[in-house]
Length: 120
Length: 120
Image (cartoon, rainbow over all chains, first blue to last red; front, top):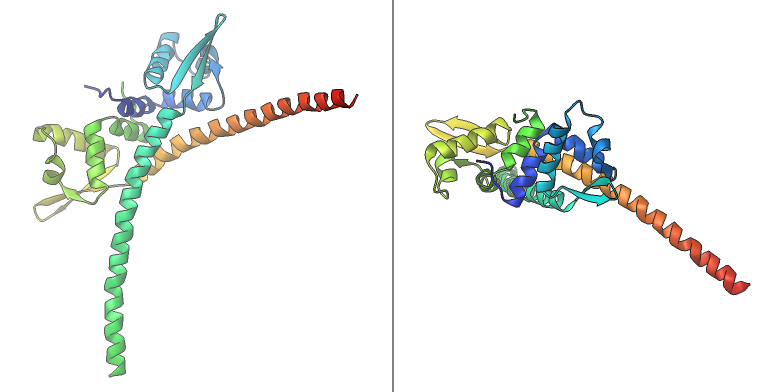
C-alpha cells in the first residue's frame, strides 16, 4: 500500500523519530553503523531496518573502507522534500496576500464614502 | 508500527502522491470534498481515508456550513516539517563550510612553503 515514488520514500523515511534522530546524527558528519546505533536501546536488526529505509530513500549512503562501513547523509532528497513543502506554503501565502489586498480595497471604500459625507 | 508523534504524522501524511495532490489543490484555497475528489479516479471511501490521514496530521481542517463541508489547508504542520528539514541542511552546510575552511588552510600552507623555497 505504501507509495514508492522518490518523494514518497523520502517523506516516509522521515516519518519516524528514530530515523530522524539517525539523520540528525549524520548531519553532524559521517559515522559508522556502531556510532549511529549507540544512543538507541534497539537491536542491531532494528537499526539495520531503519538504515535500509533511509538508504532506499537516498537520504543515507554507505561506503566501505577496509572493514569499516561509513554512513553519510545525502542532502539532495532533503532538498526535494523541502522544495515541495515550500511550494505549498508559497501558494497559500500568495492566496492569502491576494485576499488581504482585496479586504483592504473593501475597507478603503467606506472611508471614501465617509469623507464624501463629511464634505457634504 | 507507525509512529504517532506529531511530526511523524505530518511526514507520513506527505508520503503519498494522492495526499500531496489534495494538499496542492487546497493550497490554492479551501474546497469541498467533492471538488477535492474530482481529479482522482478513486472511490469515495478511498478519498475519505486519505482526508482522515491529512486531518489527523493537522494538515487539513474541516468546517461545516449548512450541508456544505469545506476543507482548508493548515500551514502550521508544514512549518514544523520544513523547520526540521532546514535544520538538518543547515547543520550539514555548517560542517561542510568548516571542512572547506580547513582545506583552504591546508592548501595555503604548501604555498607558503613554496614561496620560502623560491626565496631561498
